[in-house]
Image (cartoon, rainbow, N blue to C red; front, side, top):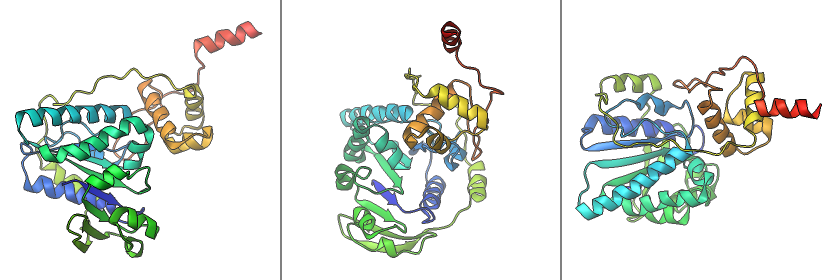
Length: 301
């Protein structure tokens, strides 16, 4: 079934996700269950799952790649409907739904279609967010996601969005959660199990690695260079810091645009890819403006 998980920072939703993934790995075969993991936070903890046979593709961080995966999922749903098959089960996990839903409203409707149609043919979604507002948890998502898990939430309004009733605003955090089945109205207060990053990494060492070519292919996307690319490049090199939130503050832009700029800086060799939970290293010693810019300045003089 589809599941929506929501909770504020410290509520335990990320730890719950890891415990769910580990439990699934321990009780299934990669021939029966395959995961697609989308984590917009570059360098996030999802990186540790890369290479497992349970993954169709390495962990996805960038929205254009996520939208390609959504398109593939819709094609796979259609293929499975025609061939009357549901195997293997595919579980699409998104760790911060808000980044996906707000980056492109038109393309995010693809995710709504996956949620609506996928479970009929063995394609399921687990969506996690700390921002359960209506622009993120849309009417369509609320209608077709019957399994809800709420950690501690800031307000009763957030609790109503996630559970259909108040209560999650009174939870204690640290894995204190409420599970609710919207269809049956069954509601259980649960304590999510704790599993540390170190324990998760040890567990994953024992699982088979994927030595074969990946099933899903991500095409290189020709993306228009952001007009603020050179500004972003300059401040990153000058201050030796590279993060979406840093660009957001320095350039007075939104977080999603900051993420896109980070992606472009990585693709153009300004910063190194993230390693584990460590931020990407700034690769350039000094900022050099583009040749066109130099020529223009000389002509002006």
